[in-house]
Image (tube, rainbow, N blue to C red):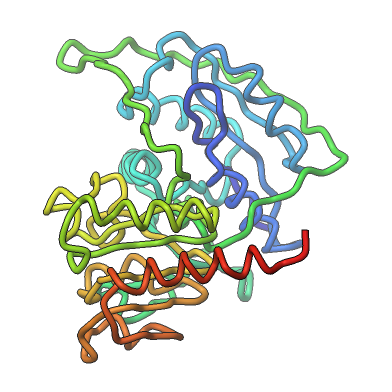
Length: 328
């Protein structure tokens, strides 16, 4: 049976939704695996209480003043202390910027096998088999990890559903370790919280995404209006972000964020390989583009060859009409 250790990513004492998906991924292995949680930070006793009802065997807590700010060089030493305490077979991180950073540092420190940005996994003949996209999403690789030794995996958000609470309370284990102060060549400046009222694209079930075909930053307001009506997040292609139409925090693609929502609306996006790598695992893709030969149509379940600037207002108008006709 595999022993898993899930690293709890959090910010401002709020657990990242990606963590609940990691718990669901661990639970998907059934009786082939058990899992524990690991939380690092300063004054995070309350954080442990938020995740103690997800049927983890234990919750390891490293609570230290020098872990108040995210310095990966310091945090990886705290994770190493928990690994030495728990002796897991696999350490699991979310495939976020912080998660991939810590996973790589821990793999280097421990000489462990590493698979980053995985999309699925399973246990086969007592070995862990991990699936991930390669060649900018054009192919899918299955990697059979060695049975012996530590293995480290970062798992893409949106692939597994969030775990649900259980009538169970995990014991909390405090782990003491020597946490050095931040070195002189590193200074914490601050954390800039996103100002968007809309949800993060990596956690959204519906994404309304726009490309350079929308032509101006002002035209993106239509997408925000549509997203508000659908309860969706707003995404963008790299071309749209490079043009200043949207902030880079909205960018989806190989050099942006990877998403797998239930519904992805690609509006005015041609579908460069880099963009497709970031969204092709969406459950349903609807593409709207004036170019009939645009690559986005090759991955879309539904397509419309027309101008997104005409399509979006017409869709909003139709939604209003249907809503007015629906019985209250």
